[in-house]
Image (cartoon, rainbow, N blue to C red; front, side, top):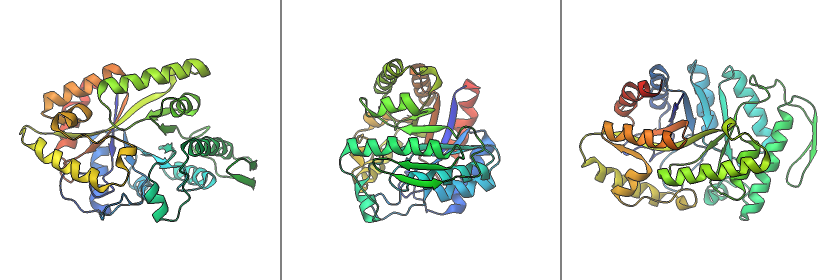
Length: 328
């Protein structure tokens, strides 16, 4: 079954519509998504994006929603490995999996936003291979802590002395690990080695298909069943009939990209309405249906969606009413 999740608008600029960063509105949106039958809720792990707009911290948001939702799964897209020590992350994961009754998905990546980390006094490593090595070592450390046994660990980057993480997560051996990655030589190999699921920001259909081919080859080389990895894509969706809306979206997107420090490090900017249409799911209902099917045909199994007409629920509601029945 194809799954559909909602990316929570936890930051200014998540929507093309004016909106405030208030938890009440965000919670109402999340609860409506659960009522409509969406599969998952996701929060971005950022503290600031470089502009003046506000932002809620991801783990706090999904922890609060764990107590007000009942069915929908909760996850991060994606935690930055260097925002918290891996040992602390493991403890937080185990606790939130308990609080949510086993509904947590752990999305995690190496991190990319240098100025954000430096502004907050967090450690930053410019050397990408070193950052990747830290990420892999952190994953291994967390997996050991999820066992609930006493762990002593002396790695290249992290060390523990007799650490115990109890109680263990509800989901065993641990909540699903979603690795956010695009780098083909190393990061997609780590997806093949360690991930229960793979996430990437929106790409045109042919580029997404190419990434899947790379993962398939890495799976062959490490002896992993390719089909055991859930494939997902984070994207932006808005359903509308008036084509002039695309000009408004293009203006908003350009302004948002320009306000985000190093945005191009993680996702190239789409500068024209045609580029936006090829990268995201924007347009009338029939166009959006066709775009979803194109991605399903190449292998997307889980869509994580920013509905960019938030705080309106129009697209959220129309999508559930018109598109869910095609895949359920």
